[in-house]
Length: 115
Image (cartoon, rainbow, N blue to C red; front, top):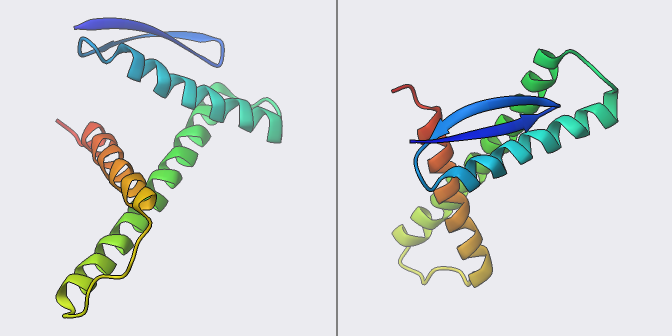
């Protein structure tokens, strides 16, 4: 198991992760740091716990919205599959993006599930 030291809002956090996932964990910490910087810019300094909670809620909102979009796309696909008419033309780039988004959402959801 690898150990990674992450810096978020000026504080160091030592976390463990699977070998090879260090860069991914660092990227997630950078995303949290970016959210905190946005909160600071928008509303000034706040307590550490409050800023972390706000950053987490903002990221959870993004995940929630992505899941809603994915479910809507899946419902449209299921409806199109059930219909005897050919499926509507779609942008191949959009399909790839939705696929990547679905995989990413599932990875995040798996990490959030209690063990």
